[in-house]
Length: 182
Image (cartoon, rainbow, N blue to C red; front, side, top):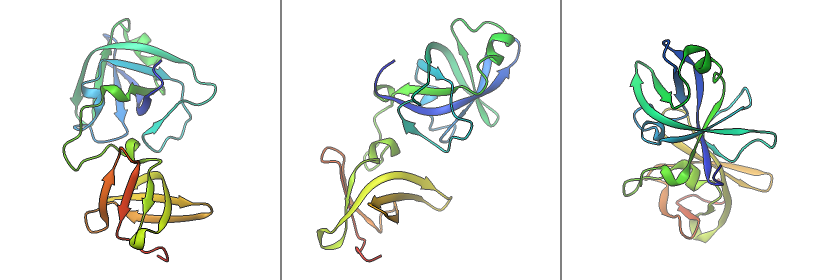
C-alpha cells in the first residue's frame, strides 16, 4: 500500500446482486476522488470517523481493489471492483474504510486546496505572529474552519477570503488576518 494513502470514504453495504457496493465519501458525492480513482485500499476502520485523514490505524490490514466502475446513484456512490462478483462478497466489505493514494487526486483549481494538504501547515497571523499549526479542518455549513493548535491553545479560524491572506503549500505556511489574542 502506498505511504501517501488518504481515508476518503466508507463502504456502507451491498447494492444489487452482481457485487456492486455503496460507498459514502467523506466529502460531497460530486467532488469525491472516488469517482475517478481506480485503485482503492479497503481497511478495517474505527466505528466513528469524522472525515478525511492520512495514514492507517496501527492494527489495520489493507487490501487493494481494482475499481471497474464508480458512479453516483441517489445519495451515494455505487462501485464495482474486480474480484467482487456477487452480493455476498460485496456485503463482506461493509464498514471498511476506503483509502486512495494522494497521487490519484486531480490537481485542484487555482485558489482551491485539499484539506489534507493544509493539515500540518504553520499559521502566521497579524504582525507575523506564530499562531500554531493546522491540526484539522471542519465544516459546519457556512464555511470551512481551520483548527489551529499551539500547545494547549486552540484557535478556530474561518477558512474564507476575509481572513486567509495567503496559502503557500510548498513552504507549508498559511498567513491569516488574525490577531494572536483572538
